[in-house]
Image (cartoon, rainbow, N blue to C red; front, side, top):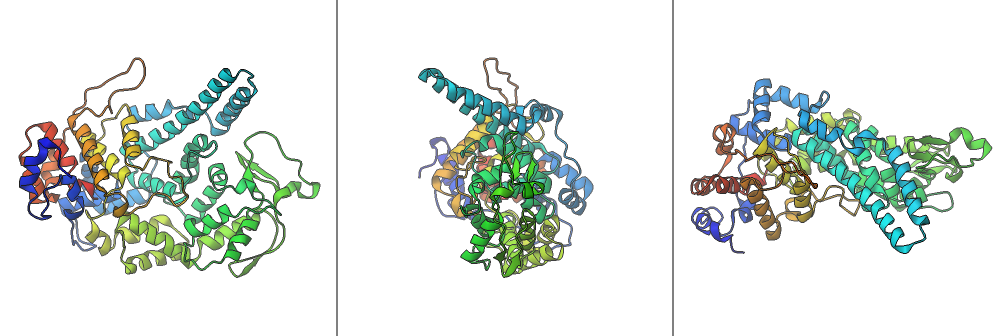
Length: 523
């Protein structure tokens, strides 16, 4: 693939060594990255601290590095593992506070939208009905876009960077697709109430929170799961993708029994209460939009993972969650997935085993499991070698370019993620987006990243111009050649990359070269 014409001389000169290919710098992302063999327990050098921050946060910035240096790396890590209440720049907090999803609870929004949908369906004129139905769909789209924007703003600016990374990780692990039914309405609440509060807590609590949220129940069809009309969708994914893993030692019979345990777990988005049998009324539960309807539950005993689960209602679900969460298979499956995300596409088995043992000893403490990983030699040796998926690339590039200067419009970032195939809440299948390099390092993907680097580097990305008939715009040119670059970031770059940067003919071109460099493709 030819390089963009204006860049050919630079790339031809700089990259004939090392990778031996006359290709755009981005296409060399897989063959030029820096790392460190720093052993655990030794103080990190400045360049190594930069690399560590690139992994623990959504991407290093001048302010983040100053904070870590002031605290010391160990204390910084502890604060990220056990964060206080998050802080955001006032302008960012104001943007989030102005959102509909921040001002009205999801239950109220649902009632309003349901009424709009019913009103639209009742219209007799075909044209008017179509317009009303389109308006309903557009409102769902707008709410989902608010949720995605809020998520990106927190990724960019939250003081609790690790918590935000883990929120994305668990949203991907417990994936729901916004395109199904009215999940566009629910997905922001799912992230806010089910995922973020438990992202660094106990895995059992996180699993229970996802199971009780209408987004998950609706996405995996458990509201259709009832006695004598079993739907196994959620039961299967609960074990295969959420806990034990595909080789976790369960059978098809266990899937069927788990589905029986989950009967009656559903969604009630209105104010109506079903006519529950008199003898079962004490077991009926309606909290928010979660419902357990005992009329729909299979009260027979179940044989689940080699043990009898006595039929007694919603308590069976708690028992199954506890069993799944404490399983050694779950400990290994979750630990390996965390290590793939944070360390390597093929993580060292000894590291995964160490993390799994911590998971089991601490009753599934996510922060403790992460600490075992972050303080391991394997983690330190992997720094700057983990390829960035699209979300990591986009967020880290904007963070590096603008630090804590608040963007006015996340729309360009959302569009970039769509172009690269990783839109927030956009994975249709329950397995979530892949976390390995092979899924994101195609030539087409690299060309798109170069275009994004050019848009950010030139200051013409549209991040500081609002949408609407009277748009606001703020001047904001990225200042990448700053103290962070000269004091630490420069030390992580290969000689070939530095040579390319030295030949840039303008600040815009220099920014583009840096943001599209092989090193900036890794964390």
